[in-house]
Length: 129
Image 1 (cartoon, rainbow, N blue to C red):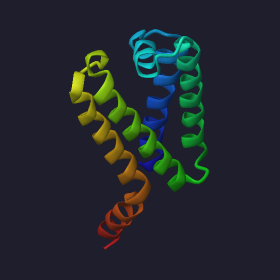
Image 2 (cartoon, rainbow, N blue to C red; image 1 turned 90 degrees about the horizontal axis):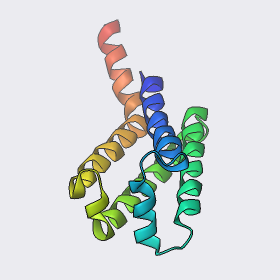
Image 3 (spheres, one colour; image 1 turned 120 degrees about the vertical axis):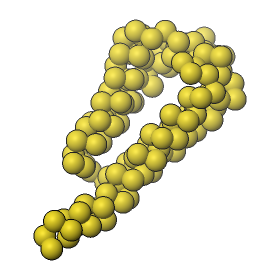
Image 4 (cartoon, rainbow, N blue to C red; image 1 turned 30 degrees about the horizontal axis):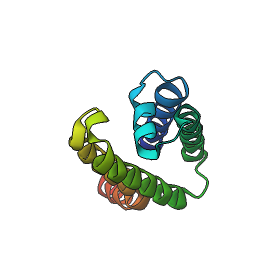
């Protein structure tokens, strides 16, 4: 079950990185980067962010240092969404409600990486009794 949940998280990073940013199938992401950074190279920065998101996907799937990975994911998602909430809420898909979905994703990542073993052990104990 934990593997399936990690695959879901990895897919979120992969889809957002490759489709939304690298391939620019959702131009809104580049607009957000442009407004936040006031940077002339927003296209290049957006592609770089997308590549980093794809790398995060592979890190999640690798299961190398999963707790550190989870902490970094949580920090990235929280900081990115705080900045977007403040600077570019008009460009977000659900406006300021995006922060609700970000919080749910953060909670999901936290529970999977810091509490899933406790939950799974409890379920196994119940089935083996």
